[in-house]
Image (spheres, rainbow, N blue to C red):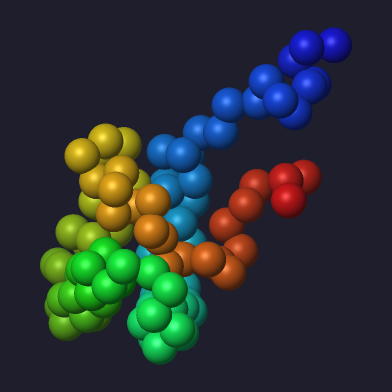
Length: 103
């Protein structure tokens, strides 16, 4: 059946970003995972450094105050297409945010 064919499955990126924001709201200590990813990627030098620096800046600003944290979490959860280039270089690899039954 076509509905179960994985080739026709459309990923809902906005839903994934909402799950990331919800996870980080509940477990802000997991920003450490993102910062570790950024450290590793910057050290390896395989990724263009501009988005990595921007992610680090956004995370550090957010960690400085509850209002800034809420701003970052809201930005992450929004379906903001203008942010897609930065979001495509997400440092949140390794966060347990996939819904049950998905790889």
